[in-house]
Length: 212
Image 1: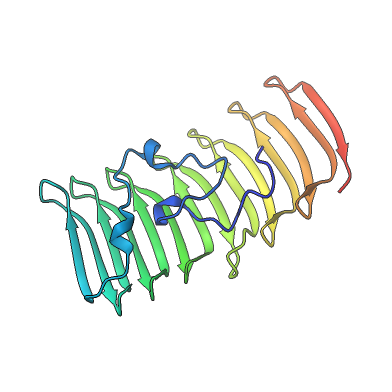
Image 2 (image 1 turned 90 degrees about the vertical axis):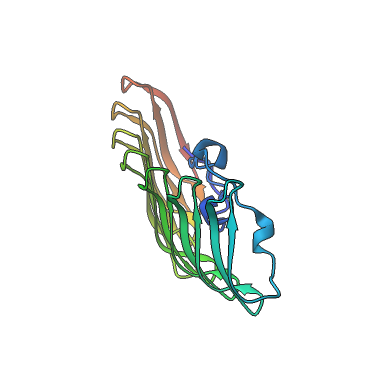
């Protein structure tokens, strides 16, 4: 179970920021992929397309500037030539669909930006193609509705609900064997009502009642 108030305004790291999501293990070290070179995103005096390459000459990044700011398509690649990230910018801000890829070309993460705010559905996948994570963002960029996290075998790991970026409603987490691990509810980002934790065999470990 994730603690509340985990900075839902922060964004997925493949889109150049690290999202503080305790259940999201998508960090550059785990991904074993090239890190972003922040210097490449500094304002440019010369507009137009700019390319950068790996030491052996393979294309690393392709970006376009207008009036010194990133505008239009942005693409980065693994040294093998496979795409790493495809997204777009508008006036220096992330805007439109953004997709990251595994080295074999399978989709890793997919989301949409509206002038640097996450909007709509965000999804991430395991390297097998199995859905890993699914959540929704409001037009204001806040978590809204159901959040789902899955194990590699497709079994649900966590199910939570949000309203205006805050925990709201029932939540439940599961063991890999499908048995309930924790069960409770939130109201306005605070625990409320009965809470129960179970062991892997389904036997209660802890019970409590919270008042919001």
